Image (cartoon, helix red, strand yellow):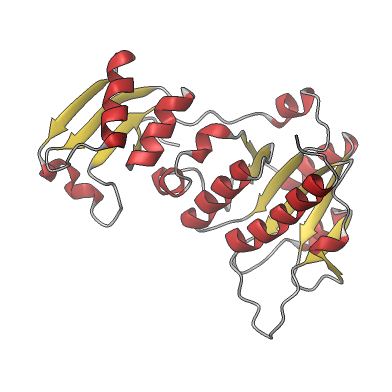
Length: 250
């Protein structure tokens, strides 16, 4: 990410303030914005932490036309990525990871991050190339959830998968042509990583070959059109259902 990162929207900025995971340098609020509960909370936390916030003319937001900034933006430090080795150095029991193979749409990535946090996923792995990176749209779409989950950026997804397998993680790839349904896998009593593929290309053949399981979401009509964020939600909440059923979540 660039050095002077911008996040926008009440939820994203409030979550960044509450989490304390990001260094916020300045908050700009349009003079046209009426104070509400979230704006007041943002001002309260900013003031208590010595963070500058200013009310500025709406023209200051002209360059952000087309995005739902809600009349508030914040200048923040870049997101801190987690190293895979550091992540694996912590104890894991019946934990889950999401591996994203070439996701291209920022809104999809933001939605996936939000779902992952809600479902208690332990981390998300993204490649450093040929994939959307964390940006202001991702942060806004995640509604601040990005500050509550480790984002692990790697140069090679294949190397990451091999390292996970050596650490006793099971690898599960989602593929529309798989024989097994996503609910046929028993997700209990193991650490597992679910690979979701790009919007059009899907999971690469090499990663499918390296996976322990390959699963699909059954489609009742010949209309295979779930986007990647929706598909991930379906699969990850089946894992949550199984854990709840087997008392693996307290």
